[in-house]
Image (cartoon, rainbow, N blue to C red; front, side, top):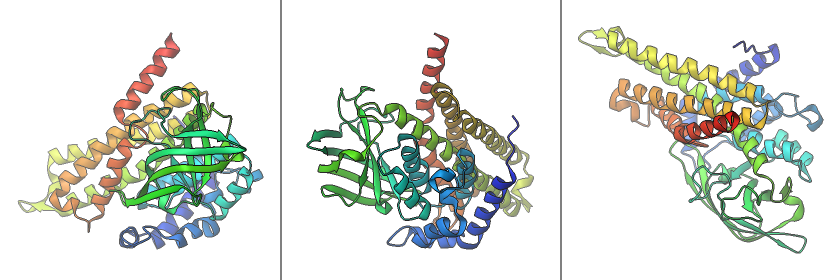
Length: 381
């Protein structure tokens, strides 16, 4: 597979890498995630004003730089190398994705605010009973007057403590798990009746349990057609999965590089443990997992522009590989570091925690194997 980056995309990678090297070292990040806020708004402002990366994937008509999924992939891989916690995925990829594809009222204004760093988004879609089923919803949006009333609860809404807006999935019709009746709304987080319980996640981010108690929203908060939004949700989630796969490449690189460096320094019987043949084989296996993940992630991004079925198959295939690689590379990195690998003071443990979260984010290996199988059998039939 020939996948070459343009000069502009290479320059984007270099500028992001350079900024993160200067402003996002491990100790600075560790202090940031342990602070009361859990992130640095000044960094988010720099992403918008100094680097311009918040607008890199938006069209020029929206005030962006005219890029797309490849630009997101470049940014996310560099973010993975530095374990960036700022809400790029939720805001640019997911929030921006719904605004671009769903084109609700006021979309242009909100996209402009995203590009300027003045609006942040979180995706409120997961419910305790839903597992990975995007249509399994108990949250409801009921017509009332000129708008809707939201009631329900969403779990593990990543980035919600920092968000100005939520993208919310809710049922406007149909049964709990039916494809029909799923709708999507953009909701200002300051709306009355919207209650959040915030907490840190194991990988250093922040999330919320979000409860909607008779939350009144206007009719123009609806994204796309009422009751027919599931294909839109699946498209944006597939784009988010592809972006998360790109992030994992940075995480996997750091896990492999950190382990390789450590085994060259750690000595047993008077020699570096990197000289032991069995450990050399182990690190080669880790490298192979990384290289396979790179190829599958590139393929997934190419498939984003194809039909819904081909897009879904490509993304699920990549997520299977990424999930397996995160487990294999992460666990071996910790094993070869020993107990010290899990200490808070060592970076390798933080990369392992993020890899572990990525393994199950937006669907486990088993879930995506079943999805790929179902899509393949349907095509064959």
